[in-house]
Image (cartoon, rainbow, N blue to C red; front, side, top):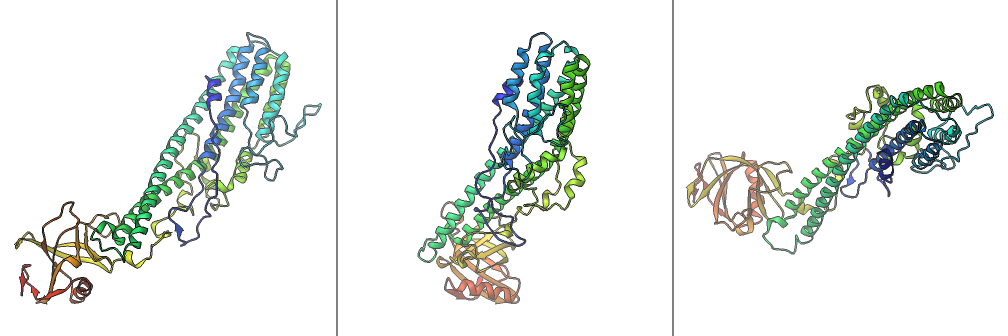
Amino acid sequence: MINSLLHSRKTVSPQSGEVSPPPQLGQATDLTGFEFPDSSSLLNDRFNKYLQLITTLQIYTETQLKIAYDSMKHYEGLNKQAVSSMPNFETNAGGADSTLVSGSQKIGQENVSEGNDGNSPTQIDLNNFLSIMRRRFGNDLSNTTTYHNKLQMILPKLKSLGEQVEKNQKEFVQTANIEQKDITVLREHSNKSLHQLSNSVQDFKTSKDADYKKDPYLVKRNLLKDATLQLSSENNRIEFLINTENQMHATETKILVDLKNIFNQLSELVNSQYTQLAQNSIYLNTNFDKVSEDLEWNNFLTKNSKFLLTSPTNFNTDGSLNEGMSELSISNTQSTLGAKNSPFMRSIDQVTFPNYDNPVTRPLIEGVLQKKEKTLGLISGGYKSRYYAISPKGFFYEFPARDVDATTPTLALYLPDCEVKGGVQRGNFKFSIRGKDHSNLAPSIRKRYVFQASSDGDYNQWWSIISQFVNSTSGVISSDGSDVE
């Protein structure tokens, strides 16, 4: 099962292409052209490396069990499998052979000398340790015996650790894929709305079409809704990646600590059975202890700082992450350390797009009015407050609320085709509009709507804008909503 898992696991390449720098405070960024660092591929590859590391040690232990009943062919098989499964981790910063992901020399090519006295450098990395392990496997070919029962107590610990890491990877990949698909769909929606806005702005002066859906003002409202959903999805993904990066650091530390403990037990068992085998194993264990828990993560952070949201280049944590590391573990993946402070997170006020400030997308006037609807001369109800806007196209819109989520008007009157009447009487600042409601799917009958402003100044502002689109009739509106000539 381990072998099939090892060979079926695929390593995903890191994010390719350029990413946008973190925006400064208050800086506007392009809605669809902004690209934040996406470390999902790097993190998935990171999971694979540690799974490969655990698998390598697990293969080693399983092979020791087989050696109890077989010959050195098992060690030969172990050597072949270990060489193919050993990962390459990042080298120290500034290394001549550093690359973006693997960043290390091939296994077996490191300049780690093994003196005649068995001594080795005082500090090594995981690449050095794996290289030394490979060489020591060959020394164990002649030192085989039966210690099967004792090794059986160690193997489940490795399997359990590998299963936990693989479970975390599976959950991460599933969530990352879902979020990426959501962002892709939402960006497509935003691009579609941007295209519609561009067309509506271009046709504003030449088109006399009374289709309110092509009104630049309304098209922009739809775009703002799509943009808000897109940014929310992007920010959720940024927060998810930040949390995963922070958790990955703690996960690596825990894996190395557990592997050291497991490997130490393995070393003691081997030493008790075979003198030579024990010497080799103790040597491996000694070198494993020389791998600092933070060394590999620091190398990883340095080599991939451009693509990691928590790197010093992209995110200044002021030491807050280190303070909370003790609370993290492999099983705890809900860390939110520093996630809310990422400079890549955006709000709708921090984006810009073509025609954002075009005058034809801004309402000539907007605000709250009271409305009483009349059909065939019958009063249908009392006055109710609604949110209204008049677009440069000449549409008089009614919306449930001012929020951009309310993109579909509940009333759309094309003022050039309407009859209006206005007047002020006994403190009633009213005007009426008679016309067809274009927000309905089917053409509606012409209705008269009576509106009331809150003050004389408010009334004059609305009436001044309405008068630009339609010829008014003098008169007043009575308190019950009927027209008085």
